[in-house]
Amino acid sequence: MVIRQILHYPDPRLRRVAEAVERVDDEIRALIDDLADTMYQAPGIGLAAPQINVAKRIIVIDTSSTKSELLVLVNPEIIDRQGEQTLEEGCLSVPGIYDTVTRAERIKVRALDRHGKLFELETSELLATCIQHEIDHLEGKLFVDYLSRLKQQRIRKKMQKQDRLAM
Ligand code: NI
Image (cartoon, rainbow, N blue to C red; front, side, top):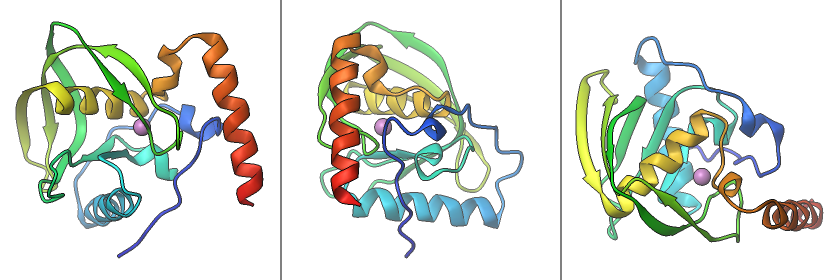
């Protein structure tokens, strides 16, 4: 089990646009395992590779209450979106901060699994929001970007203070 360090907002490395995975090989599968271990240990319900300082298009998610339904998405792409829903979100890169974000209510996503096999998934509610949140990470985008500038300033200050105290 390998627990990687999670980057915290406003670390500029969280702003890089991640690169597509060319081939899902053993190296990528090892990275997927590290991501999953790190997410479960945190604990969190989603984690994207850029959050552990790897600029590749890989995300892991598990919204089940039993923590037994790991979803792996490599090179995910949203191919259809419908409706709107507003849910409260948090992020392992912005610990302790929660706020509401409006996103599509229903999405269809296409991705590769941990064996490099293409699949499509249609989903709604929490899982739909979670997938959209994690895909944002691949674009260097964070959920706090959807909040007012004033809120963003407050969060940045709070995070910088927290991380100073943690050192
Ligand atoms: Ni996040």
